[in-house]
Length: 87
Image (cartoon, rainbow, N blue to C red; front, side, top):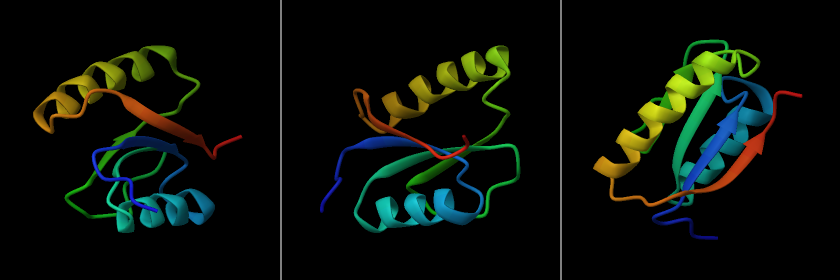
């Protein structure tokens, strides 16, 4: 699979399955936007991490605003997929 020029949000990306999914997507050329209540455990140019609890609406709104700016800088148009691993 090739996810070149695709932006994918992965929640629960700091450990376990979420981290594995994020790494797999990065290996396949995706730009991954990770969200977790814990610090980032992935350090890669195609990875942006947000520390937040997805149940906190205001923090999610703030992150989405920042994500839009980050994506514009990378010439990405939309979030192509969201993998929700935190439920």
